[in-house]
Length: 326
Image 1 (cartoon, helix red, strand yellow):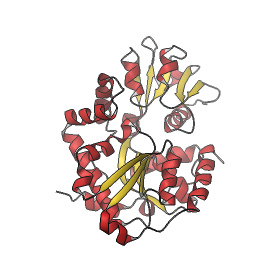
Image 2 (cartoon, rainbow, N blue to C red; image 1 turned 180 degrees about the horizontal axis):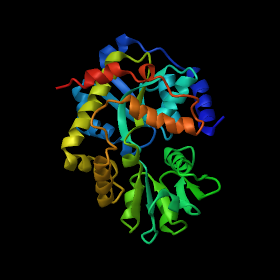
Image 3 (cartoon, rainbow, N blue to C red; image 1 turned 180 degrees about the vertical axis):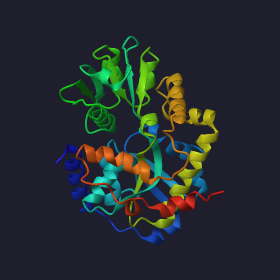
Image 4 (cartoon, one colour; image 1 turned 90 degrees about the horizontal axis):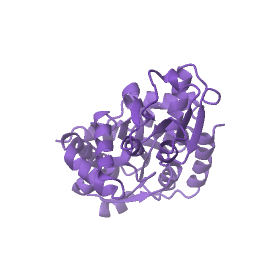
């Protein structure tokens, strides 16, 4: 059993012990809602735009955002009922659902494999095969960036254990050893990627363009969530995504506000890259193809035994209604 699977199993067992019953009447009176995000992440910018621009308020919600610190903790909050919604990779939801948790995904948040490969400026990169024999800085497993690297190496006839030397570090700290020249190659998320680019490193491979639509992060809810609350949350996210598509400058401004300790130039470059590469979705819709590509990675790594059933796992009712918003 993989580490990802063991973590999800333990998380599910503990969370189900304390799951309360939410009353529809209580929510109808106050429309308060708690959303637990795995991290404060630039990937989740659609959520911050929805909050900052008042889209949830327009939908009649008083939304409280909590930061869990890990995907499993955010998902546990939903399973136990301490939060109604969570945002993280859908693989965690799929694993929990495969173990019997009554959860599914109700809205897209990140629709591209938001991972890139960067190298030192003098590194010769013509194809993935040029990575053979290299030291590569990457995130500590389990994480999607390293999972995608391992899958990419395998697809190109290489083994992650024997053909490269992976230096796994805490997620978000990849720029440190990379810029310190401990390796000529790094696999990175934003904003670490553009922090490295600002120091002269170059981007040589982008998973978003290589994979196309990829269900990278989504909103999770219990199957017995109050449908009115769920619809309002999905509507707010849909409004945010439409806003982002037509208001790049304001979107960048909101990102700078959410990440005040980062270099504003890095924040701007990161947001523009993710908009251009299709990382931020045009809508809350999650296509069967995008889910399959994302879950294929988890199946290939042994984290999932099989693909989740799209029709039961993705709650299209809320998505379809949100797409009709005028």
